[in-house]
Image (tube, rainbow, N blue to C red; front, side, top):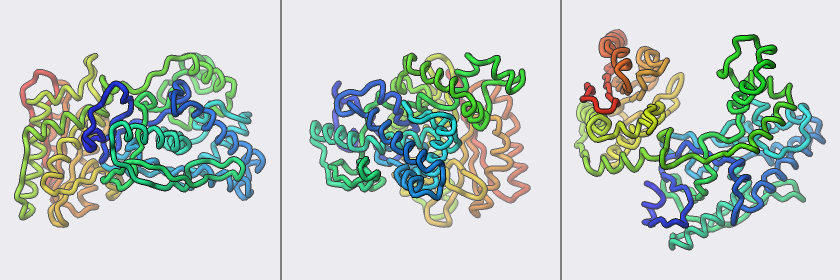
Length: 474
């Protein structure tokens, strides 16, 4: 449920905040560069707060000369521990709002990145995201958590002002790491009043939409694109003539460490660019609009099941999957998987739309849905269960996915075996005629895998092409 729905808010032009889904993280992130570019109201001075904090850690690590056993280095590591700010309901967790966060291990990665920055000639930063160019394990989620962690007091004040305007109930909560005390070089406790999220049993923090992006403005891929466009001769000299835009992050880090002048030029370039937040209206990645559309569909086409055994449970799963197919093929749901420019959206968009549809039905029928559970050797998209005996695994893949067949012949059977589950559903989204041709013998392959391993794998093909007849088979 969205924040506005839960608290029965009628938004006005004054409401510039992102309306989060309280039970599911939206894969967007708080971008410190956008905060820097648009400091207004309660967020005036945010960039100074952020940079002052990181420059303080630079000083400690520089004084320690990178010695991890030094008291100064350890003090910096403790300051760099940023628990995940689950109150924002943002990030990579696809069902709930509890991600991995930034533990002490991550703090050590960040401290190591700062030491690499110092070794690369950086004594202080103007944008702390620059140090993410110098070390692995420092991605969008970490940058977002750090930004929100440092600015938590401002976010709390912003949220409280919204609650006051809309008469939303709030309650007192305490944060032990909220305001950084520069004299003591440590975090201090603070009490704030915030609304409560019953789904994750945490307070809620709202953030202006204008501060959200799919990735931070300053990131390794964007840096490499800049280098590819502006330093192509140097790249070819160092990495051979066949260098491409698509390289691993270690290559990017290696290049960034050795070329401080290019990093500086890149930051100047970004400073001069017009940077926009994520467009919630066009939603080109399919991260936002899926929830309302799927919720409306499920309200219009409710499903209720009497589940007494495994057979009835599997029948309910099939009906829920069929509802997803019907939504895509017969009720304009495919439009949520295509952009206005005629370009189809990613696999993530199709999975989120599936989640929005099936989760509504699961909640109505007391069925547990757990996505991306760590099963066996890796993640599976969704696990449905009612008790211990009634269970099924589901994979949602695009037919164009280069690892498509691996998902059917290896991944899903591996997860089924690891979980001791006998039934799996392989849901394939086809965007083009070529996709349909590519998977023409998919049911035969699934039958062979099922016969060989003794499992039951049901294939569902969903035709997401505009103005096409139904092509789902269950």
